[in-house]
Image 1 (cartoon, rainbow, N blue to C red):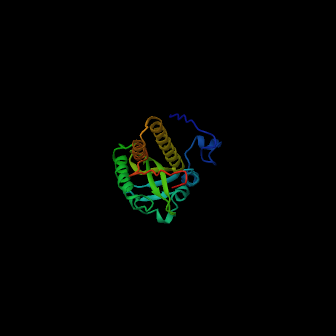
Image 2: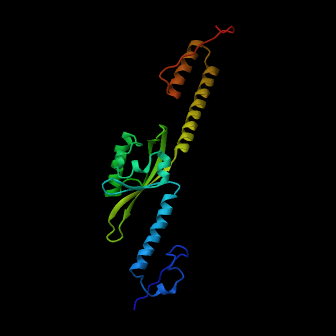
Length: 220
């Protein structure tokens, strides 16, 4: 005799089997197995479509097999323009990111060498930049552990990136103001002061050039 001890979670199994002692001692028949599979697929589809992040399923040849609504929302591209294409053909990816991602996906598929999470910049249908973070995991067939596809979870981090850029800009401005104040306090020669302020602005703000105009009290 063989004893199988299984840890189950209430509400996570097949509805018609749960709390039914009949299935504790026998395997489901063909019709029951088909019904159970259908129910599991419906649960997965519900989770897939209602996820807060974009989900995209890619097969071994790099072709997109499926995606959810959230991915459409992130980039503004409809499902019929994405599913069936190679991910390197997607119009919301920049050419530089396409080649970089192709290398990452290839290494992730074959050896799992690349980091699971990486960032890239895309383009929304309305022309606005979209900063995203992708987490890629292989989907394996249990029997033999062969990888049958990749699941990419895409998170929109545009607001975070824009906040970081604003903070970086503000810090650069504050550094420039601090350096200019130090020059004003320490430099007595007007010409050297102006030259020093211009050089400081070019260095701290990344300008190609800068100039300062001195106005008289009359505005001349």
